[in-house]
Each structure stands twice: as structure tokens, then as C-alpha cells.
Amino acid sequence: MEMANYYCKHCGQRFSSVNGLTAQTCPRHPDGNHRGRHELYEGDEKSQYTCKYCGQRFSSISGLTAQTCPRHPNGNHKGRHSPAL
Ligand SMILES: [Zn+2]
Ligand SMILES: [Zn+2]
Image (cartoon, rainbow, N blue to C red; front, side):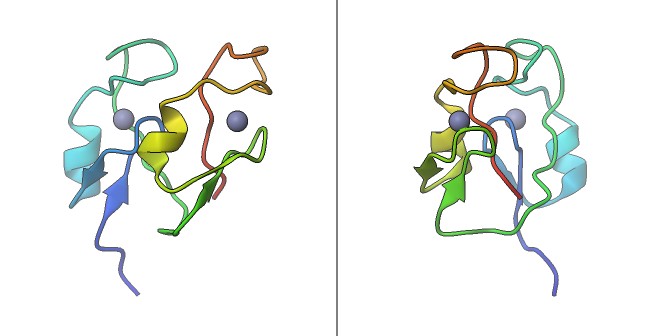
């Protein structure tokens, strides 16, 4: 089974190839706005995505990563939710 869509795990942007995904910088990169490239989310496409730190559920990776996480390993709201695989 081949995945048709590739998502960035930091911002949820969708790409048709990994090559296209990693060619661009990411507005929600953990090092800062466009301080690094998009990184591939290696899990499956789902109807709901769960934050691996706090368990909150979202309908999209972009919705999940838009908010900071109360249980982020760097501290309370010191980083964004991160999708579980
Ligand atoms: Zn990104
Ligand atoms: Zn979270």
C-alpha cells in the first residue's frame, strides 16, 4: 500500500512527495519559525490525531500543531502538540 499524501509532523502541511516536503522550511519548526525544514510525519492518515504528550485529539495535524501543549517535555506550553504515530 502506497501513501498518496505526505504530511509535515510540525505543521501538518500536505505534500505529494517527500522530496517536495523536505525542500521547504517549516513555519512551525520546533527551533523556530522557518528555522528548519518540514519533517515527515511517519504515521498513517487518520480521522483523528492524538497528541503523544497529552492525549488531546484533533481532526488534522495542522489543527493539532497549531496549539501549544500543556504537557510538552520542554515545559508547560513550551512547545506544540506532537502527533502520535
Ligand atoms: Zn512543516
Ligand atoms: Zn499535547
